[in-house]
Image (tube, rainbow over all chains, first blue to last red; front, side):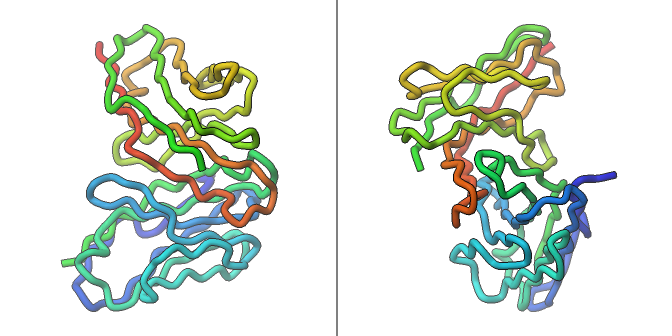
Length: 115
Length: 115
């Protein structure tokens, strides 16, 4: 009955590879997000989708492509992985109403290590 | 968004109240104060939020000063499980805002609860 689930939890891969991280939420929320936490522990938003529509797209390289097949899923695909992509990636979701729209439920994170 | 300032770290004895301060002197009238925490190796967790009235839920209490320039998160009886980084975030809570859910995480306050 996990609210926001991400897979895989750990991912170790070589430079240049392409990988995906999947995210699913069962909260009935309208908006989903991807956040990145780097080695210095700073959390920063990458993307947000509202009802399958891209809303926020921060200055993220084109190698990162989010895909939302439906409003319960938001997957993150990364092409041509680089060393600097190593980080923990968090998926989150929220309602789309008033102050509650900033009440995010986060997943447990996916730790990506690029060698 | 208004900038927030928090102490880098704090200690608290187990069973005692933990009072975590946050300054947000440039807060606007329509900006809410949100508190999140991140326990080691977990995703961020929403705690509480408020606009101008004090708020209480099962996790914590939020006290916002009358001028709204600062607030205090209170964990009434801290346990070892409350050891985490606590983030104070100020955001506009408008339905459908293009930046809804774009939480700006600073360095937060590392709270160490000691036995």
